Image 1: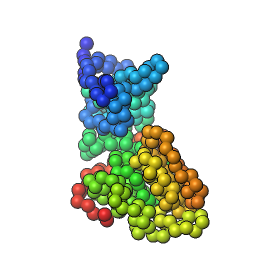
Image 2: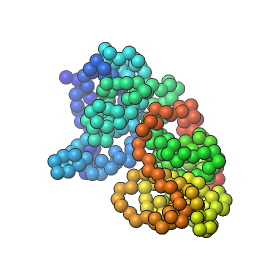
Image 3: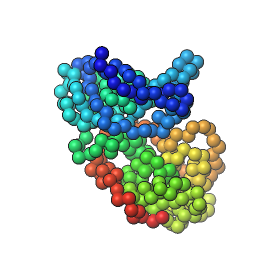
Image 4: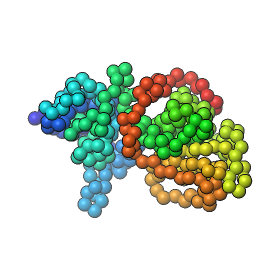
Length: 318
């Protein structure tokens, strides 16, 4: 029996590296050697919980981790015609027949080899160019989450936007907004290094919300607007919540001008009060964004690589 290493949850706050059997391919399967795999916030969540509550009565069970892999094809089944050994691929973790990869299914991306079941190019995997490094390609999945969020916003070139949270999804949203042609994009966070990165990937300005008045700063950057009652508000068209805290939602609701949009892509881990009265005064549209129904393989590799291989020197306005 040939074995390989796999990362999966252990007790609360720990992970285990275990030996498992190397997959045996069916005629419609392919085998991918993992060359890079991103670490998502959900991976950390499962780690802290000690698994996933999928057992009897919500009992925690150990699960394999990792749903942001990039790698190369090392073996293909007899009925696979559109993949070949050596192809560099990223995967759609939501398309695995045995269940979502790395988020509770039987497969995980943090292992030596990943079985691609009933593989369909363009649906379950996509081939990416040799010019894209594996660690950059592994960003395909979070960038798809960010792209769906921006698509949900329906942002246009004449819009002005602010993204709260400069983690991978927030930075991805800023990149997609700029690639979409949005005229001015602000990123707000509380960590200075993240704000420097936001400027490096193309944000027009940043706000340190730990020490700056976000509403006042947005007014300086985007001009003066008004809500439905004529009260002065920033002339910001789109607010994106990539932070996952009630303070961000309430800041957007109380700052929103008439007709502004709020897109929530962050995971809010517990119910918290929000100011719906403020929403009425702006007629703000609140939009939820989950996953990537169509966006998983819609990445503009050329545009992304240009943004992700950034010059670390800030070029925007702090």
